[in-house]
Image 1 (cartoon, rainbow, N blue to C red):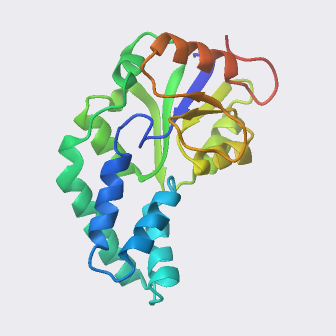
Image 2: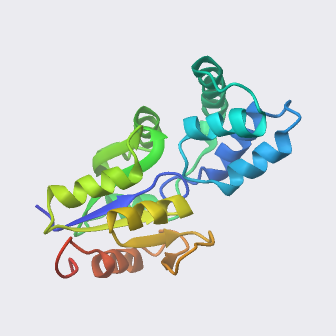
Length: 218
């Protein structure tokens, strides 16, 4: 068994899909009087599960009853908007090269996207089999990281994400974090712009990953 888990968020880390999903969310609420406020809220809260975002929009911005049927209908419309745009989504720079290469760690996906949607997106790019585990909503990112840490406390672990929600999840689980992209974070972070320099990414993972107790996995 390899001695390290590298855990990846999906959107903005593996898939260059953040802009597409922002446009899809905007399209769902385009005819609402609060469309601009809704769009601003969505952009300010990446990494939050879609169902929770929609419930907040309905209850707190639109001031309507966030019933299961209302939320479900809006979620279905959002899923349809994503489906219409998914074929155009490409991988983040370096993602394929990093995932298919011979590497000294195993890869896990940990996303707020529903698991079935994650698997579908990865299969579209021929990458589903490169991950030993795939986790999505309704699991929480912090919960997944905590479970991995508890499963094997001696195995080094690190989380790569692109949002404040990702950094918060890593902090809650006491897991090292690498920021991907140019998001502004509340706390100082190790950062990479993308996965393009695969050798540098591998080195950073191997030197920053930590088990619950002990040294890194390099």
